[in-house]
Length: 144
Image (cartoon, rainbow, N blue to C red):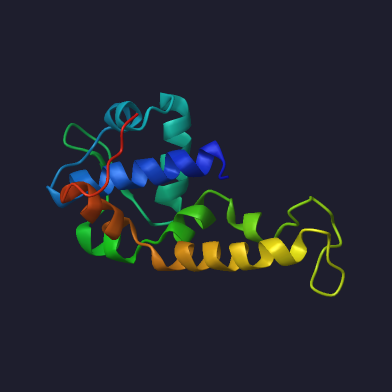
């Protein structure tokens, strides 16, 4: 449903936020290991997140990547999607047509309009903080 870029960015954000909650900074290698993503791809994804101001990075022996807990409450799935350039998925025609709209619908337009609206709401309302909460209290899991 989502691109690998977005999936890796989402996983990286959750991993960094969880470590940050405990006051830790994670290295690129640690994040790649935890997300199951290739290191070079992880670096690109993290660069996108840093450029968007969602994650901070620091060089040096005590450096790495960090997402301060107050920021994790504000960072939504939509913000990660925007940072990775994936924001147009819900605006595209399900069949890939260039002229699909409510006025000129494709055969699947009405069926997917509601699904896209609900997905959009989830992206706007779900924070990284809430995902880390589920991991911390054991109600959700990330297993690779």
